[in-house]
Amino acid sequence: MKTTPRTVRELLSKPTSWTQDAYARDQHGNPVRPDDPSATSWCLEGAISRVYGKDFTARKYASENVILYYAETETWNPWVKADVIATWNDSPKRSYKDIVELLKNTGI
Image (cartoon, rainbow, N blue to C red; front, side, top):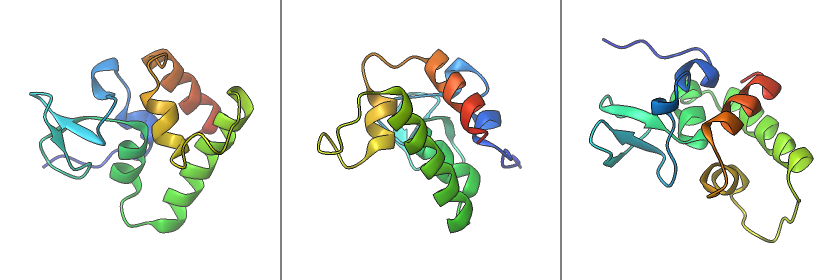
């Protein structure tokens, strides 16, 4: 049985564990739920969901840290899209290096 990583940084510890345009994917690249045992990669929001599960307080804290990081590092326009985390994660200009930097700076 797989153990749940304690941090998002631990879950997304290698480039192949990160994805875009889906909350999670299996080894074949098919979209799956973040908590699906077959998931092998996650987007940032999916990883937050996978790590913190039903702990609403921890999920909220992690999400707020990501949003604050986004607001400080990107051109902020709240009218672009309501889902800031997915917008940031799924941007065509986003790279795994950006994800690692965000995780270091937010501590999640």
